[in-house]
Length: 226
Image 1 (spheres, helix red, strand yellow):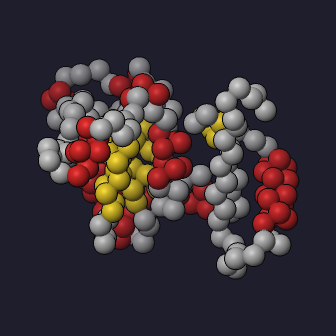
Image 2 (cartoon, rainbow, N blue to C red):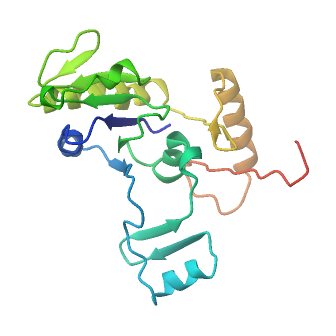
């Protein structure tokens, strides 16, 4: 599964600056990076009245995608409280080496806190689960601590802890999500599923080899439990 980490911190802590520098360093190393940023603002990408996409949204469509020759824009209704970063990253960014997020401090992903002494705020480390490192302009004990000038060291930490760990431990990945929630499955179950699925797919016509990735979605009909 694509690794997901999030930079968290109070307003004006510098988390955007730090995260942007890390993205740049990862790109220099040849990694593909996707970014997800949390915000309280609404309608960031104005869906202009009169435009086709706006008319479709006004008609009641829950999702409208616009595809140009070089990019895609998706307008989709979501329930912020039920948003699962791991599932969202699996759906949208699975072909990337890592997903860098900003915000989402209550999400179930590893986090890097960014803070400054001048903010005079308590460390989120003490109240938020999953903080694996802190970037600060003062010493922080009990966790990996980087200064604002340690971008290369921080990037190496992220590379070794998340990107290379994925490459080393999960060369053949099998992930199971049920109703948007990731379900942990043991290695032998993953191997069994992989072999069974490959066994069904190999005889089919139209398959291009080598097979590098398979995406399978099973939708259970309403009223059925299995």
